[in-house]
Length: 285
View 1 (cartoon, rainbow, N blue to C red):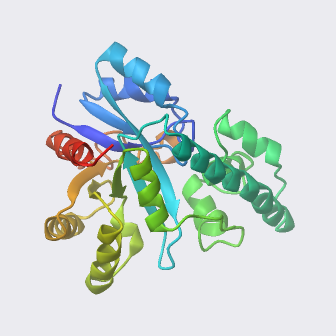
View 2: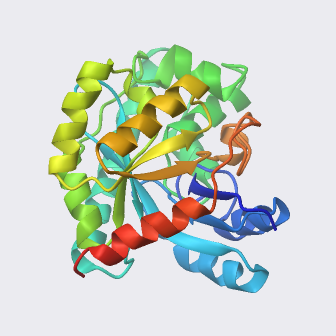
């Protein structure tokens, strides 16, 4: 087994296409030492993933990905090593999931007003029992021939700038970090390249997040350029943040991204796992 890990993955519990068990078995096939299952607003797949991880010899890190309200772009925060029994944590996740469900009929209405023949039942079926999200809308649009790919569906219709986009209620970054800490987890800023901020604006943001208790930054990510990776390595050192990394694997919903290797060049060393674990152990339970 090599020293690769992947601390950012999704299953059918949210918007991935592999069941938690399948994801862990694929990690074994890829020779990964460990993965974190970080479904959006949900930890429902963790028990299944842990059981298979024990069976096949892959360490599974309980995780979650939270969306934060940020005026300058999409901000996501990963919670790693979360306690999936923390009552307040579970209650807030239920609220976030409800916000996703409430958004879906609004997206359906917009698409129908644009002339698309699509129903909420079709989107729910595409989710296969998991929580329905925009990738499932994209899949239905593709299957009906309205678009040629999931990427096209996002770019033309349901992406953040698309005509059928509906913003959902989201907590602040500070609230996300506090919630992760309530579950005794490690809070990591995911894919910072998607924020599209200048160095000056990033410094302002990091001061804000570090003051709120941010633990780490996703330095290694599928779409980070070498220059971006170096930039985030410097920021991690400057702000005394733990480094993390992951592919953001979604299975067929992001076919260009493979588990553990991203677009082919991603390498997340297993040594990062111990640094992140020490961050967790340093915090009072």
